Amino acid sequence: MAMLKVENLHAWYGSSHVLQGVNLEVHKGELVCLIGRNGAGKTTTVKSIVGLLPKVTGSVKFEGTELLTLPAHQRFAQGLAYVPEERRIVPGLTVRENIRLGLLASPLRQRESEVIEEIAETFPRLKERLDQQAITMSGGEQQMLAIARAVAAKPRMVLLDEPSEGIMPVLVDEMFEYFGALKRAGITILLIEQNVGLALKIADRAYILDQGELVYSGLAQAMLEDEAIQERYCAV
Image (tube, rainbow, N blue to C red):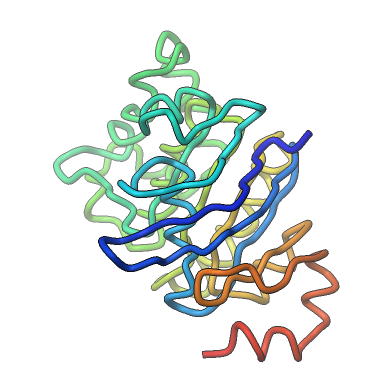
């Protein structure tokens, strides 16, 4: 059984019908990427899964539980974590305090210091900056913090929306190494990413969205080697 199973997903922004019957699956332990041009519907798909859109129909099941009937906070309580494109680092708080926010509703809050130390070992750049004001870090470091905050409570699955956008290449490479480490630690990942080459290199499988519809799916390695498919659906 798929950990996440999306069937016939439709979503609207006002009267605009953005998603038109999306079907996808993510199995436990996989890293699956969802790629496509700007405006293809990738972010809308993720927001539909986590409950951040008002009008969505179809089915979204996580470990057999239907999510569309649940409010967003109950979906997260099922073991989902979400890192939005905007990062949403809280100004006025340190790196440590931002990570702590990820533990507020988790039983792991009882051993907060230990969890933060574990996170710091996974993200060495953050370890050096735990007591620094988070907002003073670079964009790439803030993105790492957003990811660290999301995985602090040890979710079963994390959804990452455009994590490499606007980040220096050296930090992008480092970040993608962390994604591999998270996968090895047992966290299932759905990655929304425009850096197609990097995403396909670390993914198990991939889906391509175009104008709100899934147009291609398959093994990531095969898609990486198929330049015609990338050019047709992913080229700017």
